[in-house]
Length: 344
Image (cartoon, rainbow, N blue to C red; front, side, top):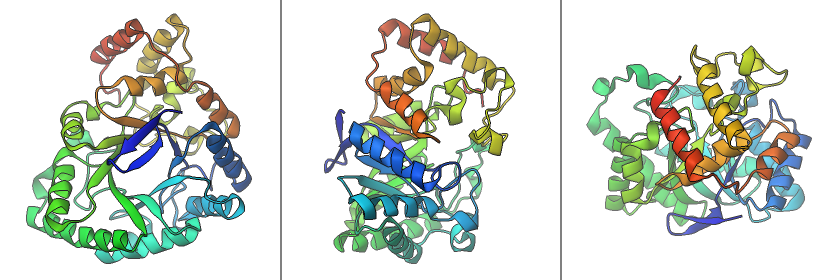
């Protein structure tokens, strides 16, 4: 696989392996098969979180995904995996929904290391900001007017001091964000430089053919600040596979567990998906392979987070790695996007 540098210090495969189904849709044996397949293929960068698995997220399953990764590591050794994980934000299932602060960061890192059965996390991420976010369709009515700037900056300093200490202890390497904005990312970077703390190197936001909020101010920020987009839901929670076309809901699919798919199941989405299905058919490209490899054509640093419920699905995804997309196909995608913007 191709390699990519993150933050000028961490070299990883240019696709990231996502694990959020481990522990609900994907049992432990299947999770281990997927980890082995991905590593054998050449992936060495995986993403997880303390709140995983999803579909649904519950207090009872908190940390189970990290535990499955940990039992694989205990059995086979770390095998070169670079690991990114996340602390759950305010209102989440961890710590009774308490917001993120420096003490919570330290406690969560220690717990993740224990579950993962390792001694180092390569990128430690904040799942969403305390002040709120416009992710998961909140962009349509986003209102930041109630945010307290001074409180936010004090919170950043508190957390960055904890991250600095954890880095000095060798427990974490890099720092990343998730579900963040341009303003938030720049402020984290500014405060880290003042404090000599870990600088933001990645932001994990949703990005796909159907969700392109990153394309403007976040893209500009990422170029100037050297921040890589780790794009989650690059297949739009399965819509871009085509499996939900015609109103189908395959047994065991995420939609069979979460009908609205985080607000993505809009009245427009199937019609817009069909536009991209037709582009793929016209150019003789598998739609999954088109959606994932398109991300590599973007004019900013981006790495898709691939994930699968089953080993067979993962194999199909990996078979498409490196699929070349013609300039004509890419241009058709841009025309389709302009005609069918943001279907959810």
